[in-house]
Amino acid sequence: APIFSIFRETLPGANLLSFRGILNSTTNMILSQLETGLDFESAVAHTQRIGIAETDPSGDIDGWDAAVKVAALVTVLMETPLKPQQVERNGIREITREEVAKGLQNGKRWKLICAAKREMDGVKARVALELVGSESPFYQIDGTTSIIQFETDMLGLFTIIEEDPGPETTAYGCLADFLNIARRSPRC
Picture 1 (cartoon, rainbow, N blue to C red):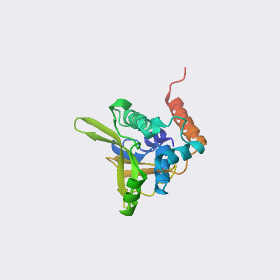
Picture 2: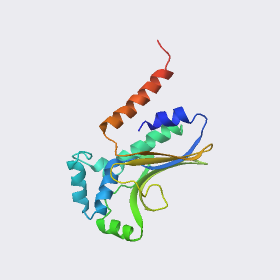
Picture 3: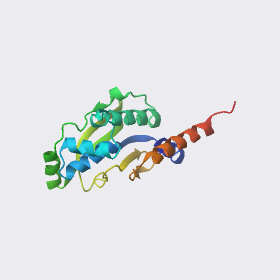
Picture 4: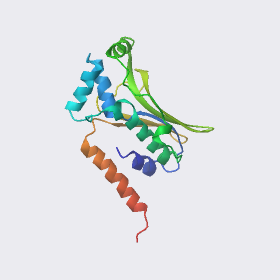
């Protein structure tokens, strides 16, 4: 989704205080597959078969892809330079189908949550597995669907859900951001 454009163009003057979301489709699909009873290796193989995980999925399952997204969002939308290495990061590699099943039995689901929050001493950012209950908007997010919830000083919470994105969605997001940059650039 064209998050940068959506936030910058539709929320002028709003100060971003924090955000939370599920921003990695591959890990969300793996977690959804674990809920069906597959073991971790089979769930990863499924995401590779359907073309959303790379041959080496470690960038996704170790949380690096999510950390890169968090760092980019913090840098651009919170105007605080942040490198992916500065994001506290725990991926999904160690979770088991038994832990996932136990969460479901307790009415909760495991999700890889990306988050950043403005604090007195700067912005704190992290990527980590969290158990979420049905009261959370993240509970209903399955498969490759993603969600991001912004907290602003002017509007409170503002949520965007991208349902089952494909390559054309990513291409559009890049195009929208490029067009907005081109509109703001002085012509030579």
